[in-house]
Image 1: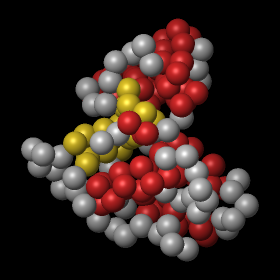
Image 2: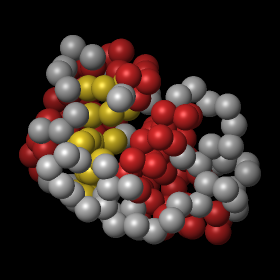
Image 3: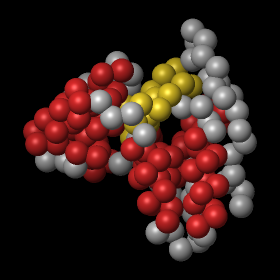
Length: 156
């Protein structure tokens, strides 16, 4: 399949943009259909692979990605495994669960009537002091009052 990613670790320098990405963006990388903001997502992936962007994600991303691709009728079990491995090999800074981040995610979830899963990415971005980039615009609309949230469609 054409979506396979090449393995390349990201190298950081002072000009590299840093983000926390949510799963909605990574799922787009594996889309073969005309999906909203697909080209923006692919451009971002290209910047990441070139080392022009540094990405922090919770390990939760890999479970959400695996599950979403598992229910894609065009993917086999092998395709899902290969896709997740390709994303893992991109060299993201993957953060495990932290009580402080969970606590903040729960607060956000209750305050904005969103899932704790989605709120965890946002809480992580706040902890890391990095912009949170999402392609989940329903979620964005609910939490847009918070600062440092960027719609994929508005990303440079």
